[in-house]
Image (cartoon, rainbow, N blue to C red):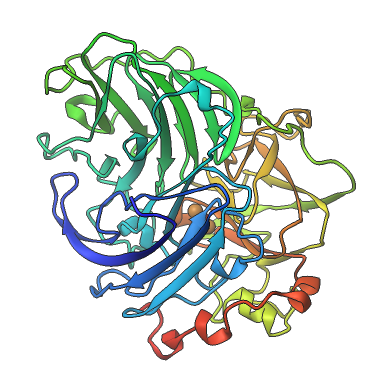
Length: 497
Ligand code: C2O
């Protein structure tokens, strides 16, 4: 792992995490991404060094710190063409931000086109020296981070639609159907010890049914928010989401399957035989072998609508500023729309347009994709999933957590849960008939991306930008890096390179 002040080198490498060799783009040299750690309150200064040099993969990059509020440092948020230009190859860019009041499980990833599907993604763990759940576990370290990722044998660059993953990687290792011998990730546990595992979905597309044979998972955190502990034996986790759970190693000394079964390709094309979609939980002193028992016995799947924040549960109330989104999909040109417009990255990042004085949705580009939010308002954001193809879609909002007052599986006529709604930064908007609705307070000025975290769908336009309290903010803005730092020599290079 690297600490909060470090270089993060982005470079190409030939890797075979699932038995198939391809060139990838990696963060810190490993397929699941070097783990970045710090403590609550730390100032992070991550100098991203762009050493990419293979044109089959985009050679510029930009890194987003998923879940960090970036209060006062919107410029360091990372999404290309929203807050900065991509970092041209051969250059570096210093992301300087503070984990003000945040601790928990986060991650980072390229936020340029679909580049993270080629490997630029990793965990960002912020420890809380006063963790309210500290008495529930004995061990929480670099070895208890579990990353889930989809892996492709094709390059993301230039894919016209939505490719299907060839393998699922757990901690950077997996097995594709044609090589049933490749090495699987092993997580070692000692009998009698209680572990805090931090589960990160770095998926570009599928959601996963995650379970560990024979073990109960006591969930204590969702997307950086400590929650009232909830026991389960299966977590459905969507692209961009994170959970912490406590596992007590109290079963027979043996090997157990860890499963992450993707929804794509649809069963039965994604078997769990032969160690596909799997890793191994191994008790110390157990045989070095794969588990013999392939069975899956799920009795108590996690209800994602029943995750209650430990502190200050309850949705914000007051005068509501409604934002009603309508999604669409046009199969003729494979384009998604939000309120009629596909998000097409502008030439000049939205932040720089704002700093230049553009302030109205009419003058801000991309036209139709910028929604202004007033200061100190309670936004109620309605996201009915009707009109979309490729459901369920996980939606992520930058710069905030939100309270999910109507969750997936709860249609429009469901009474909103204002008392103890789940609080997180990424939520599935479910399937046809669902009307996921969230609330948040506009207390963090800046342009913030809201988008489907299926990266292929973001590329096809399924996004908008909220310009939150930006007129007042721009006139008072702390010095952010000058224009030429946010948009260095990139403008001299051909688009995409
Ligand atoms: Cu993790 Cu805009 O994304």
